[in-house]
Image 1 (tube, rainbow, N blue to C red):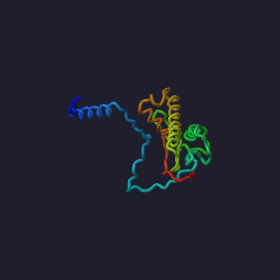
Image 2 (image 1 turned 90 degrees about the horizontal axis):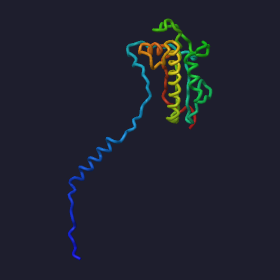
Image 3 (image 1 turned 135 degrees about the vertical axis):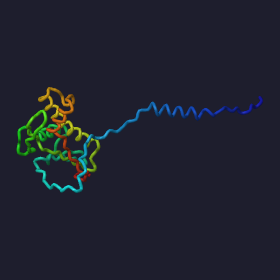
Image 4 (image 1 turned 180 degrees about the horizontal axis):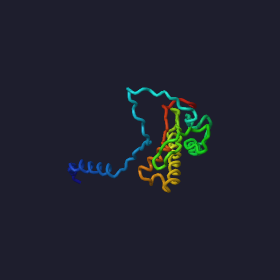
Length: 192
């Protein structure tokens, strides 16, 4: 049998095909986008302004700690994550004007007139070893406490959920329940 010469083929279009496949997969592939936590940072202080050295009263601060084993401590006592929202709501609203919960001050609020507004701050501190999942769970529960209080107030005053109010009404509800969560830099507060 006679031996045949090796055949050749034109490979010039292979680069075009590879390029088209690359573009197809880039366009057709969905990319997961990590979303962050919605927080409004306070404005930078004016360097020429005088420092206000007012001390925040202990009763106005709700201390939430998370250790390296993802255990939650609220106001110095261990707490299950499932109870955090209710405890936070009780603190934020202080519905019975208890002396161990935040003070209230009388303020003029649009749509509400003179209203007793609580002065509470939630202080969140986590350990460097805290898992991201637990950190997010705690953040979600604290945000849900504010959202539920705003919904309840909106329903009682306007007969609508907070998200369905016009922006001026939402601002008025936010004036009564502003979301104030103070986060300190993570530390080694317990555990490994």
